[in-house]
Structures are given as structure tokens and as C-alpha cells.
Image 1 (tube, helix red, strand yellow):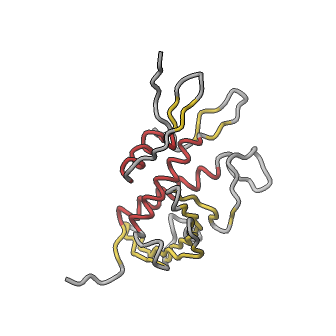
Image 2 (cartoon, helix red, strand yellow; image 1 turned 90 degrees about the vertical axis):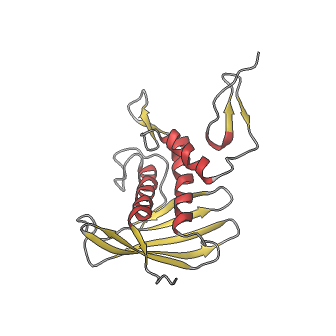
Image 3 (cartoon, helix red, strand yellow; image 1 turned 120 degrees about the horizontal axis):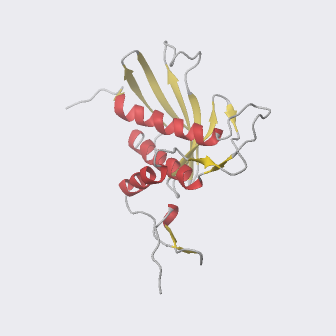
Length: 198
């Protein structure tokens, strides 16, 4: 008797207690990946419920889905990422105006490192500084993750709390979720700084 199971992250088909079967196909389109990320995140944002010992365990599938969706959001904002060195655009919110600048820091065959900065004379959400982050883009895996945020880097998947740097238990998940929310904000309210000719 064959069991049919659900397909999980990265095309892995779960077949019950006997193990899992790897699929050699990834989703074919960006829309498949983005819709899969919405299903996997399911409102949790990459964090599972607390485990029996009172901590929490990382929802790796949800976290990877967020990183995959961030790649596709970045590609919409910076379509010629592999050939161009920078892109900038204006961000217009009701009480905040800024320029968002993506600069390529390092190019490799399979990865690109991007520096993102928000330039504004106004305070960002009441904070003293505007968001700055470094993002590593994996072209072969079609994924993007934050490797530094506000001059902090080397985020682990899980932290004990309290810790020496006073990071949240799910700091890595939170900074990647923030990247996703910020990119969505840029897609919704961003405008080109380049003149458009007809």
C-alpha cells in the first residue's frame, strides 16, 4: 500500500513514518515559491510554538520560505541584480519620505552581497537611526538572508535567554522577517528616482 503525503519545503515529499522521499524538482515559477511561503508561514512568521521544556524550536521550513520569498521580492525591486552595481528609489509614506539604496558589495558566481541603506532627514519610526542591513543573495537556491543589521552580525538560529548580547531567542528569524516586511513596504510605496521618458 502506498501512502501519499504532503510536499514540504524544497520539494521533499513526506511519506509518513518510513521516511521521506526527495523530489528532484523545485517549483517552476516565482509565484509557486511565494505562495508556498505563505502556506508554510501560516501566520507564525517562522517561529514554532514553545517546546515541552519551555523554550522554542525554530520552524526551519517557515524560515526558509521567508528567505525564498525575500529573494523574489528583491528581484522585483532590483531586477538586474547580477549585472548592475546599485539601484535606488524613493519611499513615500504619509509621514515619512526617504531614499532606499541597494549597493552590490560583492559578486560571486552563485552569490551576491547587497548593502541596503535608508537615507532620510526624518526619524524612522521614532528611532535615532534608519535601517541598514547587509543581505546575502543565493542565486542558485533562489534565497536571500540578512547577514548583518545595524552593525550586528553572525546571527545564530537560536539563543538562550538572557545572553551576552541580549538578543531575542529567535533573532535570526526576526531580522529576516523584518527584511520581508520592509521589502513589501518598498514594493507597495516605492517610486523610481529615474526620469521616465515616453
